Amino acid sequence: MSVRSKTRRAYRRKQHLGAWSIILIVLAVFSVSSIGSIQLKQKNFAYQEKEAALMEAIAQEERRAEEIAEFEAYTKTKKYVEDVAKEKLGLVYEDEIIFKSKE
Image (cartoon, rainbow, N blue to C red; front, side, top):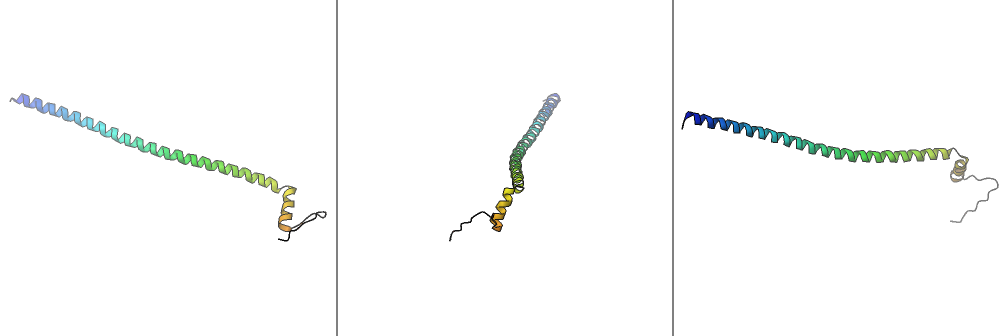
C-alpha cells in the first residue's frame, strides 16, 4: 500500500468523522429544543387552567358584589326597618293583631 492511499483513507475517515459529529450536534440541538417545546406546552396548559379558574373566581366575586349592592339598597328601605323591628325586637304597628301558637 502506498502512502498516498493511506493518507486518502485517513482523509476520508476525518471527513466521515466530521460529518458524524455534525449529525450528532444537530440531533442534540433538535432533542433539546423538542424537550423545551414539550415543557413549554405543559406550562402553557397549566397556565390556561389557572387562568380559567381565576376568571371563574372573578365572575363569582362580581356576582357577590352585585348581591351586596342589592342588599345595601334593601337596607336603606322602610321595608327592611319594619322587618328588623318585627323579627328582632318584636315590635308591631298599633292596629296589628298578633296570633301566637301554643307550640
